[in-house]
Image 1: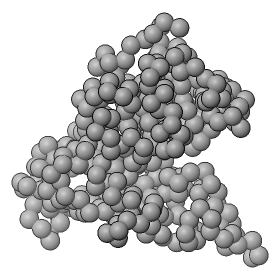
Image 2: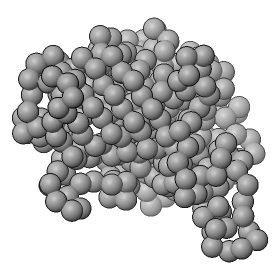
Image 3: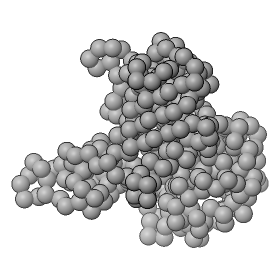
Image 4: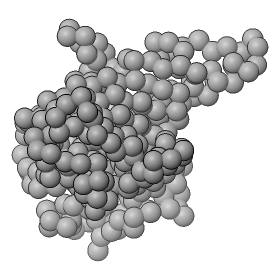
Length: 343
């Protein structure tokens, strides 16, 4: 007997990836239900070599599921996750709704899998922001080795992080630049995204940072260590899939690039691609569709004592969303925290 899984938001970018990852990793599921809004009722989605028909969120009985992978946005999660959890179904939520709730664990399994045990308070576990997830996977083994004091990060985030409409806008604007008279005005983004970079993700806050930048700070402290200082600048770039990050890290103790490279090579979820030659580094093109977080350009930061600089790339729809959620479910099974209930 396997586990009964419901994927809410099954027609979206992340929901579809969740179904792909469940099938690819051969998750021990006896049933998989694709759930969406009423307007998507009956829409076909792929699950391995099978096709699932979407069921209506408002009509589905979550007492028939052990795990709910929630990827339908904060408003839906705020309304539905407590109700689903009350049915005995554990919600692993991909939105920002529950990340900062002290009664909800915020988890990246390679970093803080032990925190999963706190799910029983609300039967909800939160997935972190996509840009945070890949970063803390790389920071964790280095923090264990030398103690991180401060991080300065600049992100280069793909449009898929803003959904299918954002991907369509980049595609249509790109075509428009080559076909006169077909220019597409910005709708999803505040400025043209094709052939451009936009240093603005989410809303601006009073201190001048955006909420995306604040998320990276708050989530790193909750997941990794509240003592770490972090400053972020988050930028949307004309890439379809794959977030990149440039990091400058200040440590409490000395650590050389060679030591860091060896530590990261032996860390879970990390692939080091770091040849000091043309093309000897990872880019979003290579990371798309891959589970690992890629680390490149590891070098000394001579502007601070005990400093390193590096480049991190990961598929934001996978490690930044779908993969991390399913890894949480796998960790729950491994820790014997998830019970199979009779149908």
